[in-house]
Length: 343
Image (cartoon, rainbow, N blue to C red; front, side, top):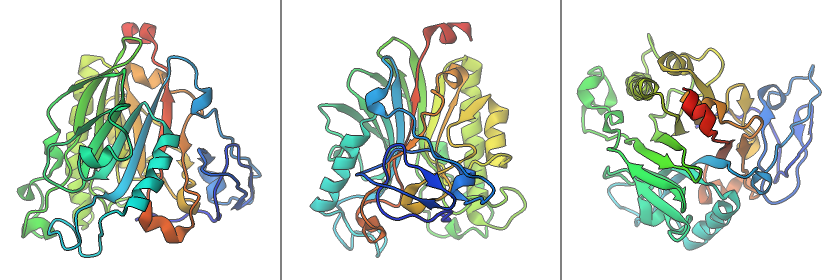
């Protein structure tokens, strides 16, 4: 669930212009970055949304990190006990449509959420071009990491502490009855073509606490997210102690705005940079980011300024269920061995 922040119909194009509160757009699919003030339609700000270089213009030696929640990407039959009653398996034409967007996205590393395992991910990211790693939990909504061939992958144990146990939250939580498992995190070390390493954690956190108070409220979802935040900050603090480059990416189900206590807790654990801070997404007409890419350690200096991109769909909103309610979000890193050695 997201809160819409702007209007605008139809597909968007690279280098779209923004005039006051509406978006003018053409082309198949856009990768654009818009200031939050523009999507909020501030009449005091006449601005243009400038799209930085697309993947075809990326400098040699850079890597593209993406995150994409694929919204119940499964082909389990209707009535499967693991699926909600209103969720239906994907049709072949849905998959073909998404595969075309995946090919256009062309990431080096992609965190994929709500995917029913590596075989489903392979329908969008061919195994001859990508190594596919999935979390080991037994859920139809799993986290999968797609890594381009040529990048080394060393798996670490899943961060299963993100699957919050029922006794870790108060007794009035709805989960105190039947246990509903949450998604684990996928933890891996990548060896990049230049020899640098990047530790990555791909996550899909608890929904329902997008910007509510983490402390002092009565939302069960916020209590669970607060517990998950402790797990995340512990992982980040360990990477800081190791002095290595790292990235946490995925569906945070949290709007990391300036001053948000969730973002502040991450920054207290280690100096990190959020790719989306101060920005808003053009996905499905405009909304706040909940899909996040956060980098720390030497990787803070690797993020290419202005490289944040969102690929929007050209289909009308009525087709959202056939695609996803999330758009792929990406950023470009330029690893530098000198920076790695200096920290």
